[in-house]
Image: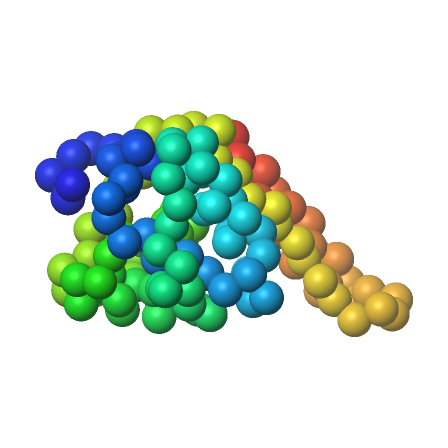
Length: 123
């Protein structure tokens, strides 16, 4: 798989697909379940992690494969190759959360920049 330019979810059938704990990352958990279901299989229920980097650690040790946001591919780990999914309809919601009070000028600037970057990622 590491030699391929992109990976289809269908290519993961028969492999241990490491998912995220639903109570920690419900959006990622459901997205992975939905993608696998569309491909006709289910991820491995015995491997559900609470953190992305814990999932990558399992991948590095040869326990399976996982799906991560593109932004994580900067984490260079031994025995881990990042490949884009050929399914282009895959997406995840992003939220910016702050304390419920009048936002400072710095927060407004940061929120504006975060929105701009998020829109660039989507396009």
